[in-house]
Amino acid sequence: MVRTPCCRAEGLKKGAWTQEEDHKLIAYVERHGEGGWRTLPDKAGLKRCGKSCRLRWANYLRPDIKRGEFSQEEEDSIVRLHAIHGNKWSAIARRLPGRTDNEIKNHWNTHIKKRLVKKGIDPLTHKSLNGKSSDHPETPPDKSSAHMENDDQKSNKNNVLGSLSARFLNRVANRFGKRINHSVLSDIIGSGGPFNSHTTPTTSASECEKSSSLSSTPNSSDLFIDQNMILDATSLSSSTFSSDISDPLSYDHIFDDIEDMTPFSSRFLNDVISHDDEDFLTLDESCLENTSFMRELTIILQEDKIDTTAFRDSPVTSISEVDDSFEGIDNFFG
DNA sequence: AAATCGCCCAACCGCAGGACA
DNA sequence: ATGTCCTGCGGTTGGGCGATT
Image (cartoon, rainbow, N blue to C red; front, side):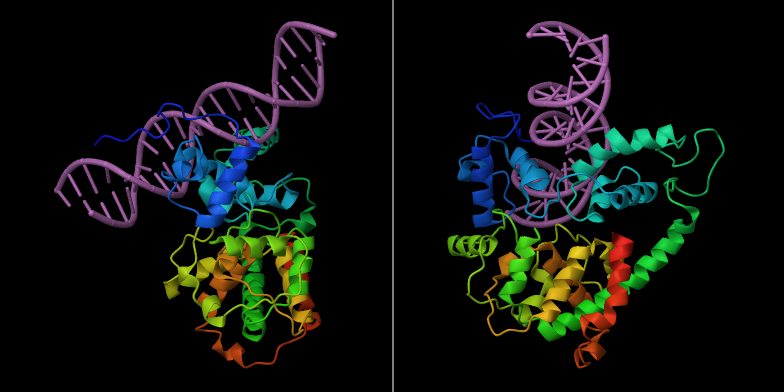
């Protein structure tokens, strides 16, 4: 079996990407979506190999990438997840929304690993380096014991809060699935949420325009999210959620992934709840696909629709009445 | 001011494996 | 069953840059 060379072709550029190259790649992906990386460089007018383009997009240009310093909570999560998954960076990255496997890997190698060694903990086994074996993965020692939780406790808490939020999401979507006010979008954009940035991928030029108009100053056009589209989660790209969502028996992983629910999500819900105007923006499917929160919401809806039909006709509770849940979620997930 | 060092992280490399013809 | 394409993954490299000498 002979593999065709990927990056060996004459004249292909390597090394750091220029702004111009970034713009070309962004424009192409916005117009055509992700995938087809091998042929992408030619079509996009880039003198790069497809692999390089894919990496650049996945690790740097993707709109949902969170940049900047890792929070203490994120570092704790990485340590905890590394104890479970080892060097499965992509598995860890799936639990840390907005962080790439590459970023996590780099952060682990340059910061966390050294810190663990300094504390006398073997970063490979997560056990004490002085020979005293520990049954528990590393827990950051700078936290008071009052706040110390073992993994099981955390996991239980996680699941409880996750279920609460997922069910509440279901109710929100039942009530508001078709309508999200444009001022909500405005707030999201202002907060640097998933609708921000020039890179919101769309599938056509007109959609690009629509997207860019959203990302600047929201106008008075309307937002309309089709209910069928929301429930049709199986058609969505699964770069964030790679598990088989068609299997009802695999619902549990949804609640594992609920730690992806950032405070942003609850702010978003809060905004959705508190707005009920008549002006709505049209939101195309591709926008939905590329909005990490909407993707989460969509998949939770898809997974939850069978066993939570009881919620469908239940009255919507004011967000203030479920504050405890959201405070808990926010506090827990940082 | 210049040279050197060490760290950080974006990018690359090679391999594995799924999909498809 | 086989060959090829394509994508994803984990390990590694090397350029940039700040700190130190």
